[in-house]
Amino acid sequence: MWKVDLNCDMGEAFGVYTIAPDADIMPLISSANIACGWHAGDPHVMRRSVELALEHDVAIGAHPGYPDLLGFGRRNLSLTPAELKDYVTYQVGALAAFVKAAGGRLHHVKAHGAMYNQAAADPNLARAFAEAIAACDEDLIVVGLANSHLLSEAKKLGLSVASEVFADRGYLPNGALMPRHLPGAVLHDPDLVVSRVLTMVKEGTVQAKDGSIIQLRADTICVHGDTPEALAHLKALRQALAAAQIKITRVSGGDSRV
Image (cartoon, rainbow, N blue to C red; front, side, top):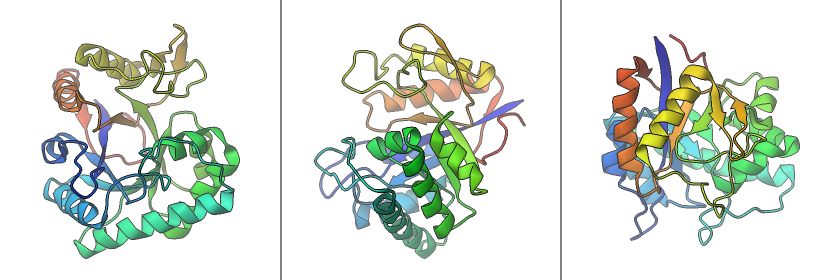
């Protein structure tokens, strides 16, 4: 029997603006990465998202990003490691307070957007991100891109890690995610999403844009809540994973086999 976590970036509304159908998505996932108010979210959205996750017994993760509401946190910033560390500490602390107030416990941390990609590629930023998590709570699981610097730096600090793969994104030959402006960067066909996920979980591989095969480990699968087909993807994945006898369970930082 195999097992895998099914996660989604949640709480990315802001004020009167709604990004994704969080109430419909939450029952379909095992882990939620909740925006911390900088790339998206606000205090009210954060509180409601935490409560919704607890209602459905979904593991709660902090989803820190860059202070870039206009760019939805998907534009690169030039930061020193010290600056990144402060940004992460600030946001994780804010969400942790809402989780504690609701009677829950923060479970993991996953960076958002440009912060995620830059920390995956730059070992100095990766180290700063991991140091921030270790200082906040060394029991938190660090969720990061498969084969990335972020996972290796977190491991060096003795943190638990979860290797993340993406159901709805294309890959470059080096294992990075395709930039969103490129054709094929975002996948919209549920059948294609399902077939790729099953291959990633059971075979540990994914086909890159150029046809090459990337070796990776799939501890947790991300479906982006702001993708228009998010609900269709999640429903198709749950059905396909069950048929393949792959158990959906919250990320633990352990092996993908029971």
